[in-house]
Length: 353
Image (cartoon, rainbow, N blue to C red):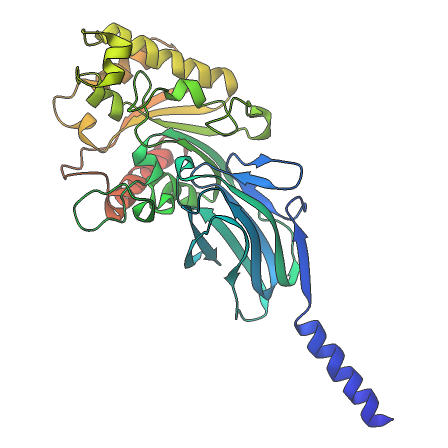
């Protein structure tokens, strides 16, 4: 009888050591970062930097995901360090996010590296070897509006070819993520490679989609769900290229044969910033530009932004320009880090975070 009791005790101990917790997508201890759409049975991740975050006491985590195109990449971040890069397959599947951890408290983040045109991912839930703890808390809230620079397009292409392939894009290394992590900020990234305010490389612009839950559907985002202290707008790089490209189909469609006049450019930018101000009456808004050739010496585009902001007569709207990086292509990981550090210094100086 004595040996039987010992056996039962050991069996219970082993079972508890490997106890699994099934976590549905709508569990209150799951924290979503980014503009994540909540559906009947899943959470929809589309925008760059959209994340699922948990605190847990345990050793391993799996996730059930359904990827639209099989082209998305995610960073699995454990206790503040990137533990793996996860390439999703098309369709619904369970993925091991992490295993073999020392039993104890951990923080895990599943971070979408790639922008929305690579497809959406539907998150159903988690299997945790252990138990969930209270969700994380953040000190600040930031929202970013931007283009390929903010997405981190080609930041991991070290060949010099500036390739826009999905596996070279890492939004986690973007200046936006760098600054947000430094300030322990919950942040949203509303960004798309090639997008502009007046003109894009395709047939829509940021004012068309900035208020959508998912960019390619007209369902509106509920701005009451997330109220940032700070909004950072980094747009006009694509406008600076395309507004002088008379042969591009979008130029012909929007401008005809005549490049836009400065007054036209300024008024449209001002109108977009007014739209953001209407959503967030109390937020600080910083209109930035760079660090590609729209901020090189002699460029008129920073001046357009300055004039647009001046015309708003709003003391809560600021301008700040990243120095021209003076290298080919999109910012590298190192150049993104420099931009992030620049933004951190600006926030520290202006807002005393």
